[in-house]
Figure 1: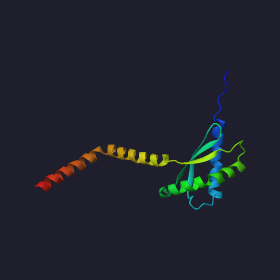
Figure 2: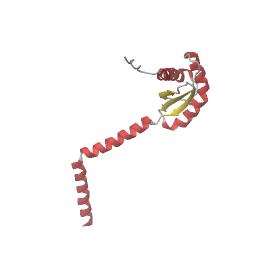
Figure 3: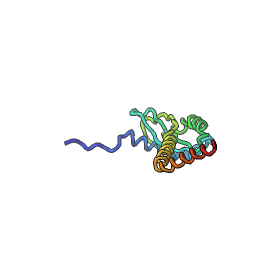
Figure 4: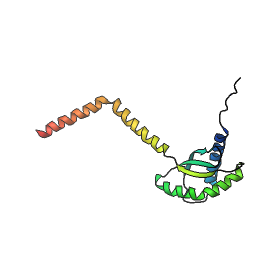
Length: 141
């Protein structure tokens, strides 16, 4: 009889725990004014727990580079604090990566809305085109 497969691997559970604790640390423990409204979207941990990619987004797109610098400079402090809260044999090195999937999703949604809007009203689009042609004919006369 085959064993039932577990829902999550240990590395997935560790990644989720790191994400929760890191979000709280950034919110409460990080005093760097360059870090504003940061949202952690995901954490990926390598199988040997030596490295963790922390994906984040920011509310103000203009402060993206400043936030990246601040998070990179605070990575050692955050790793040390995580080590106090999460008991692992070795705490992974944190690598912060900007997650542009939300911005891409908004862009794709706008494109879809534009296409759906144009496809839903083809009669209006034709009427507008016909009105434009009539106006051009009137202007020529």
